[in-house]
Structure formats: C-alpha cells, structure tokens
Figure 1 (cartoon, rainbow, N blue to C red):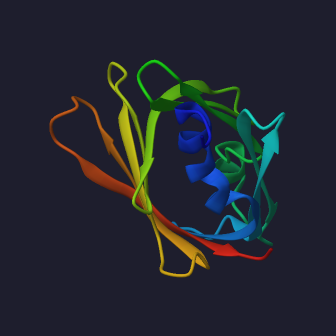
Figure 2 (spheres, rainbow, N blue to C red):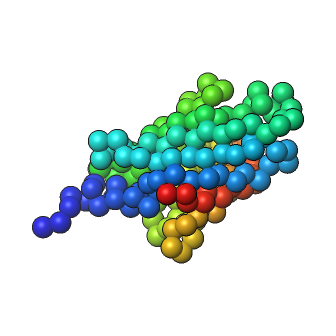
Figure 3 (cartoon, rainbow, N blue to C red):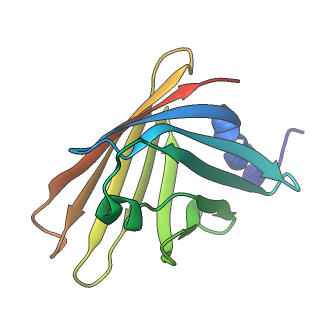
Length: 155
C-alpha cells in the first residue's frame, strides 16, 4: 500500500538529516567555523540548528548583526503539499518562509514589505554538499544576491 502522501513528501527531506559544515561568502570573515544539524522531531518536523565560532578580530558591528545561533522548524501542509519553515535567530528575528524541496533543489521564499527574500540550494550529486544562494529585494521585483553559502556534509 505504501506511505501516505504526506509521509512520502516529508521523506524528501531525509537527504538533509545529519551534520554539515557551512562556508559563507561574505565580504568580511565573521566565523572561524560554522555548522548546522538537521534532525527529525517525532518524524513529523525537521529541525535545523545552526551555530558558529566567531573569527578572531571580527568587528563588533558584524558580531552584533550575526544571526547565529538559529533554529528552524520545517513542516508540511498535507492539503496543499507545500512545505513551510519557521525561523528564529540570535537577533530576535522570527520569520515564516514558504518552502519547496523537489528534484534535489531546495527553495525558500518570503514576501515581506520592504524585505523580500529567496533562497535556492542545489544538492550536488551524491548528497555530499548543498550549494546555495540567498537573494534579497526591497520591492519583490528587482532582486540582488545577498550571499552564497555551501553546506558540506560531515555525517
């Protein structure tokens, strides 16, 4: 008979489960090392925790703007088949992103007045890394690259 549709959709996220090192392409080196973990909560929600060690000499301004640590919770609307992600970070930011995960491409997007965001991550063949880009827009029409990052699988 197979798994219910909602379980099959959730299982797409299994490729994320584990520990990953994060490399972020920023104009200033904030972190000496950053990492994230993904783990199932009650087989219904995927929880992501990210954190990092600040680089020696990181400027106080950049440190104050550091989002780490962060926590996200990913879930599924079984009626629409659409994923969503709840996000919270060290700066006190709380956001809701719509999400898709299909064919090795992970997408997040958020339409908020004055600060629209979108993320596209592509899982490399074999699943050893995820190459990703965050973009931002003030109006949801004109987009610019915010930063690139790479998740490299540890376990």
